[in-house]
Image 1 (cartoon, rainbow, N blue to C red):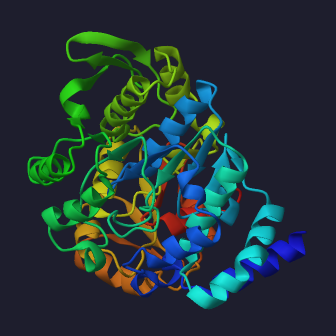
Image 2: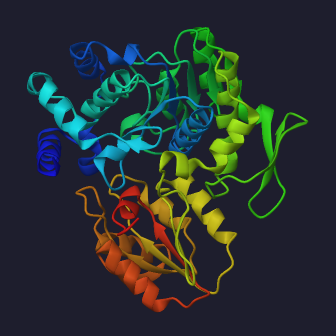
Length: 428
């Protein structure tokens, strides 16, 4: 089967444009291909209850936490996310288990005539595959993360129980627009007629976009950060308050990183909304899901510890807002010297990202093994212009080995700058 599976993936990679490899040319700003594929499959997206999640940062973590809570409550839960880190099958999961290779082969063989006729993108095929898989396996509910944007994202053919928008920041501006209002308008495209919508983080610059869209579609809107707040009780624990009332005491989120404080209110507000729609989920299920998310959903790459003495952490934060949060988290660590293994992709705001990175660190500039990767030399040149110092070691794992050789046991090695740098780490 492994040979058949590899042949099938080669067919998908070679014949269908894939955004994570080639960038904007793979983006199809139109839902017609996904609609046609779903129609050919008997509209599986209409047979499954779902939660739809968009946002610039935090949508992956929020999707995994919501799925973990639903699993804790005993629901058979589908989880669709992108991109994958190590293996294609990570994109489509049920209760944390990845889709079987046999199913991927069977699906592509079944739908090959439609592929040849429609010429969909790689992402459009994987979205249709996920809906088909969840319908065949009769999941109770599927958590669906958008790929890019919202309004024209392939996942936006569903009518979910709930829409969640985590936050708005600058990313994919060549496709989504060059202002926060334009980007918010694209994300707001997942809001559906009469379907409740939760916004994790109230941002004055864009809240009007969501309010207007929700009013227009008679969708009940709530800003989670107005209702839920977290108060630190220990190095990694929080009390969660529902307005002034204690909701959860000493919550110890498995996903580390200060930015999860922005995601958790949106996650809890979403679960409360699902309770209101009749799903049976207790406060204990919420705690279990948030405290065991990686065990339940097999999430990787979010402030993930890879070693101690020296401490080695990787994180998939890759745009300016995501990297700001990563840098804030680095500042909370105690260490003697900081080493950073850094790679980026060409279509990001490289200069702005480099300017926020720690000047005192020593950098190993590398590049991931995808066509979109920014050349390590070009990255090094731009980094020098903003005062970052280091050396070029193109291969990600070679760069990690160099960092380990330089670092003492009380030092800190951070690996990131791009999802694809993290994806290239051996034994992740």
